[in-house]
Image (cartoon, rainbow, N blue to C red; front, side, top):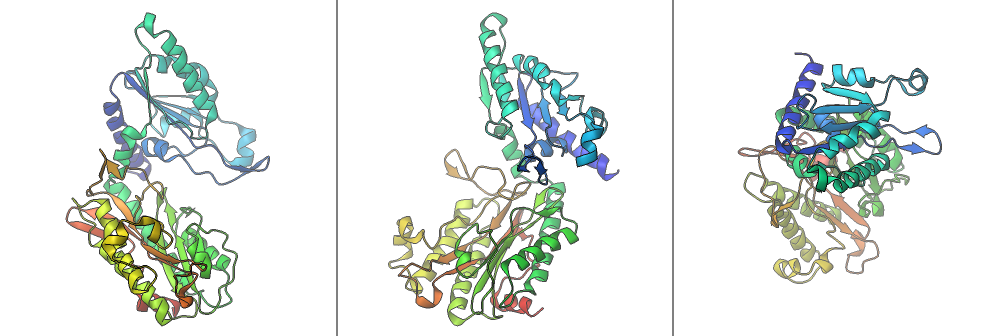
Length: 442
């Protein structure tokens, strides 16, 4: 079977699960993400909506997918951009409605301009509409709202019409949270590409280099190995910039004695890698830097040890948090016991401001609730998450030893939950201090 045929079958199987979950009286409407632009007419590289892609494989802008199990002859409809030779001259070929049917398995396909008169009767026949508000597709959102209001007004006499609006995540989030073998293979490849690009970029770390040079090296390394580019804006933070969690200016030179934090990942066939490593710019950690680095690595390893089926994601976080708190007590940054400090988030938050994990998949911060029925979610085979503790010592905080002020250290790996425990997808990139120093020597 060709890759195209295999992908069509995969998406069809996912749609079948959703159609069954919807039942005959519900409709799901999914919209493609809006096209990003700068100024009046400059298009940025387009990133498809993850939910729509997950169920259809469709990657062109403007598309709307409609899943309506009650329409037994055509439960899957795609509304897409029509062919347009003049537009295609500027931005490339379009598939149009014919390709939506022939290549993507739509039962019916229409130009997107027909959505306003074809969608309302589909919605009017449903009791429940699954549609996400606030996606940026204001045109479709206004149409859905208007259609629901009109259908509700006639429900008393017609005996049908939508009563409930539900976020599609109520069905899709749990599906996407548990990765199938196809997804796991793509995540492994994204992780491999990410790790290799990190190894390559590490050789450029030296006093006088620019944060921007490392960003360029990482992004080029992703593309050279077959990725479409970075999964998110690459972070390269030297010195105090590493204490800014999502620093992306990447505009400062590296200085001797600093640490530089690299947080980046490749996007491969829509799936994301996400790695963080922290390097000594001069080639070796100072004793004070090494103490903090080893503390972060210990928190990382403590959290990783608890990634297995049946444990909760809260247990993973608490293992990292306890280890990091103990280190901050030893450094004299915090006072008291670990148990006492766990009840005083306001005291440790400046140094430990983020959680230890997030889900990973089609989105770098992938879908899935971290609590269910008010309780921390238990890990299951097929989940993929990051393990990324960090310690950040602000330059202006008087409790921080002078030698460590302005230090930010984070270590992040991508981890698959397996039936017997876990697999570190990014294990090819070492994290121990001596190994990190060795990477700098090539």
